[in-house]
Image 1 (cartoon, rainbow, N blue to C red):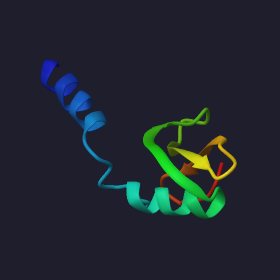
Image 2: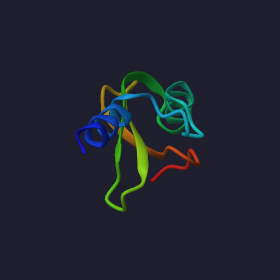
Image 3: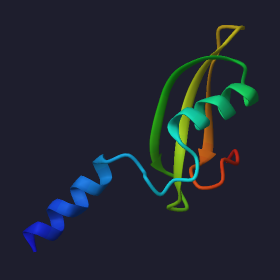
Image 4: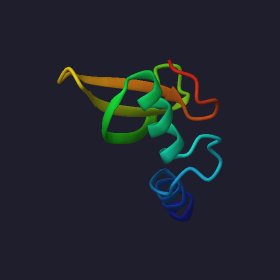
Length: 77
């Protein structure tokens, strides 16, 4: 039981080998959607329990935009 819990915790910390869209690809897609400087890229769960990338982009207008992409398809949410 303890080993199952440990494996679950480790799987959440490891990079998503199964994700079709890598962290770098997500940043690139987000820059096409909201041109600017990428500040942060985080993996997380969306409200429908799908894995997503949340990318914070600083636009040329000085605004911080958050782009949410499906980690499997790369489509904006």
